[in-house]
Length: 348
Image (tube, rainbow, N blue to C red; front, side, top):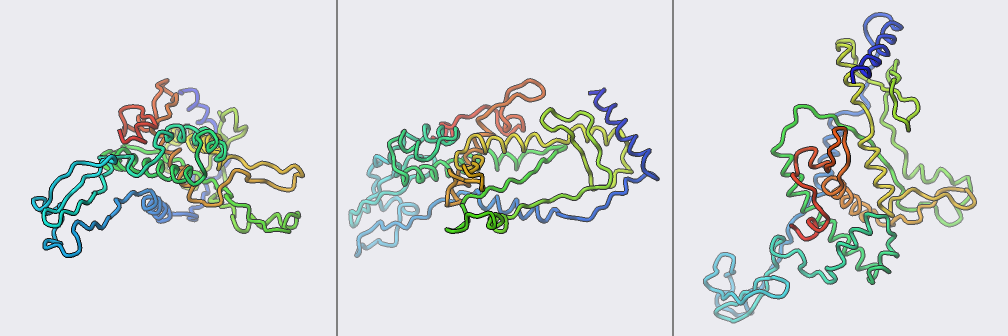
């Protein structure tokens, strides 16, 4: 580490010598701000949220004398008649003798109104190992409607799991320092070209509808990293903030830590594990890209990404710099063990 910092010192000193004065001649024109980040966090928080289903029950017959009472507040006016096969509580009015089943809570039953519950672990494994939808349906002996209903059920289980182990954990934990690595990947879920638009003159249609977003502001003197990784070739580290007031040792330490490995690793997992979001194929005639496995409904891509994110953070261990193989959640200190998909599916 000492030799790396010294080499970074030399790179920084060379740039300082080449420049007049002690400033980097950097501009601070904002191309983004924290309000945009806050809006995105608020959007994601509202999106990944589970709410209990509010059910309106009829506990009495039409002309019951105590039709205004319910077992939640007046349990003495009802008999308990055991539980159904789906673990729902049965209540019977003492006056009109009507029996009503009450839907169980999430903790009481994770399989309420779920047929073919036995296929869920296999479905999750196939989804996370890039198995196409049709192949999964053939292997599990189900139809496409059942496949997507089970996918939504898995998505909701993941949200409930994250609500207990992710959101609440971050409310009670503090970090002295945090290095945030962000990136953005845009994927075309649908082929937006219409019939008769296969020629080269229509190549920009997808770009007009799904434009590429570039949030980048280069400073005047980017620093060439002396030790780029093997897959990067040349690597430049740029900063839009004036660094003239920082000590060179502090700048060198920051440059050592700046990398995009975390986001690149997760995006590689998206491409390699999710069939509906894998890399597009080039057509045989070479006229364009084909998103052959993509969904036409974008909500299923959101479901798959949430399931993958939960699996990646809590179930998939990796070797880090200290040679300890743990999951990202364990590394952050919000989990004390490696979970499995069965823990998430069956609410363990």
